[in-house]
Length: 135
Image (cartoon, rainbow, N blue to C red):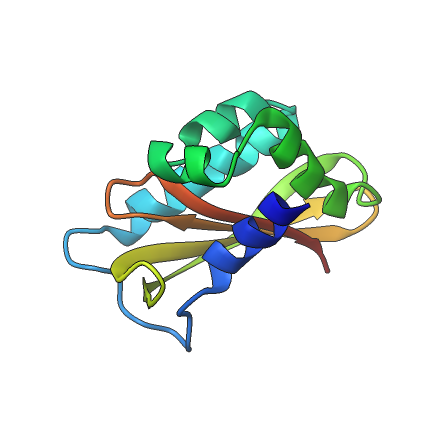
């Protein structure tokens, strides 16, 4: 459970309104990387998502296929994935870690409910945070 809280905190930490992406990051690349994570999630490739986390954070917060599966429990009532409707990308600086990052919100339609997948990425496009919530 602690890992779930930490994953959510990494997504939201230091995020205060829309900010430009860190230097060298491209909005389309960030959006594509986030959509790739969402594709793995909806296909049930939880190990692939765990492997996409930056190695130091994966180890520090014990990110495993099981913790990613637990994050996906938030979408358990949404039904099967239908399509992605939009992706929003913004930048930020994580005050806890003192580093810039990009955050992408990927809005998806599922059979019963819509789901928002929030993926935070470092400047090398490694996952540093993940949150899933139903609308």
